[in-house]
Length: 485
Image (cartoon, rainbow, N blue to C red; front, side, top):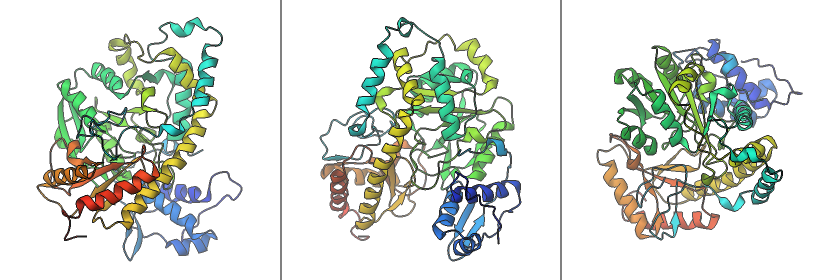
């Protein structure tokens, strides 16, 4: 039985103390691969804590890929082939584009068809935007007739905002960096543009398949050689990465877009080992919606576990605040700063200094944290309602990606070579009932043998629309899946 010291007076929740202790023992090798962990009931009794506390700790370890549940047997330690993650780098707890495709995550490209319910992957619920606070901050920014705000400013973004982002990333994602490593810009596309200048001699990139198609389209337009790498329930299949010959890898490890899984601990270490194994290799970590997780604590940023300085971290406020804000940030490894200053620092920041000042105050005064906590509760309510409606319906679907983010993936049947064609029929049948859903095939670089699946976003929907949408899907798919319903 595990003997885990618990500090009852600590501000850290007991489940997190248990999670950290087991995680660190797995990383150090004290708990070897294949070892069976105590049952939840037994460990709860041994530590004199509730069963729910143990379930939360085990749930977080499963989500991060440190342990795996085996039906009828219990929990077992997963294999970690590369143990490069240093304890000081571990997490410190203290789209619709056009009419039928869904490439976007930032900004909302509205459908031209008047659907009754649009399960859009874009946008946020603007009914709860803190308009009063925003107006107050705008007045404060301009009350002193600050002429400096109308000048160009620092090319990387104002220092005050970069310091605010630095503090936020450390506290929320475990990312350790200096303000001079941070670049502020309008959207992730701007960040990728800067990277294309920095890596102008590196034109071979590996991307998850499926992937965020906007990024794929961007790299393709710049003439990159793109190698798609398949994913499974643990994320990118890193054993396939070396054979691609790529120098760069673009990943969404905390919440894969669009499938929704978490890159497992073992795969994370293999990915970092790939980057560290050869000079000039780098990982682009797109952390697009890490703020929204509904089970356990946030998944650590890959950057926080990087011992080599090979992870380029990109984040955005589009999901957490509003798409129209168009403020993103990038953390460059120190090894790339000289290169940036040589070839790319002549680009002016694409965000107005007034907006930069406003966002920095929004962060520094605690307004962002309050808004985020509120939106987590609102989205959790919508998440739970959609999940319940789907489970109570007669739809013959497997639900994936429901532990985080703002969309679900619904998979149907077994693997097939005509998955894209089946998805097209599902989307068309839903459209006849006035429901807009999104085919997973829209996000594939190269089709594979797989399950047919569609995506449902819920951030912008009212609760009544969620219920109406699921009922309409039942009606739409009755003819398609009559033998399964």
